[in-house]
Amino acid sequence: SQTIHQWPATLVQPVGSPLSLECTVEGTSNPNLYWYRQAAGRGLQLLFYSVGIGQISSEVPQNLSASRPQDRQFILSSKKLLLSDSGFYLCAWSVQRNTEAFFGQGTRLTVV
Amino acid sequence: KNQVEQSPQSLIILEGKNCTLQCNYTVSPFSNLRWYKQDTGRGPVSLTIMTFSENTKSNGRYTATLDADTKQSSLHITASQLSDSASYICVVSAEQAGTALIFGKGTTLSVSS
Image (cartoon, rainbow over all chains, first blue to last red; front, side, top):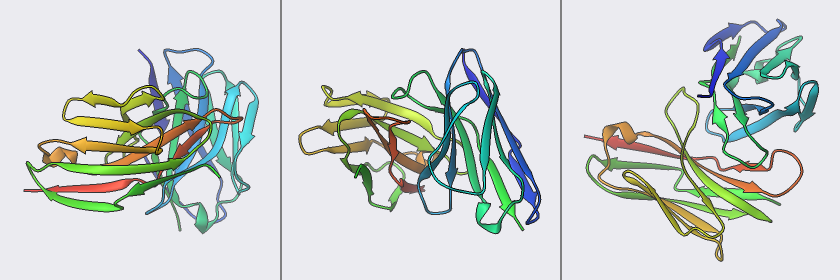
């Protein structure tokens, strides 16, 4: 069966520090991968998606970047965090673009 | 513009009661619609998925309906339990470039004893 792992679960980082959140998927090949952010009281906002290794598309301009060094690994990064980067970050995967998305457990990021 | 609107924003009901959550969308061309349940601090989990030709789909005490003509969907929860307290998110998939998943902001349901 397929599983998705996302870590860490919570993270407190000072402003200006770097960020690296990692997401891995098991049990499937060539998944579509996604990074979402969910701010308090708001819906899920798509940040990045990837249809293959090294293929990253960004949905919104921001202080973050994403990379896909391996087929089932998706990394969300920042060189210097801003206070506005605080939020709940979710990694997800799907078989195809319009099929069901399976979410990780999320990372609660607080930038102080 | 593709949008998904959910109502109410929040809802409080007593344990054992039924409730209905609404989802209106302006997504074209429509592919499918999903309802997700998101517990606090956790990732969303899919409850149901419906395509254009499906009107009703059930998953235990959850029943989703879809009216593709009026572009409306509802999620009915029967005999609510405390564990139903969560955010319920309507997600519509569009046939277009990119990820094609449009998320509603969710309805926060609180079930009290």
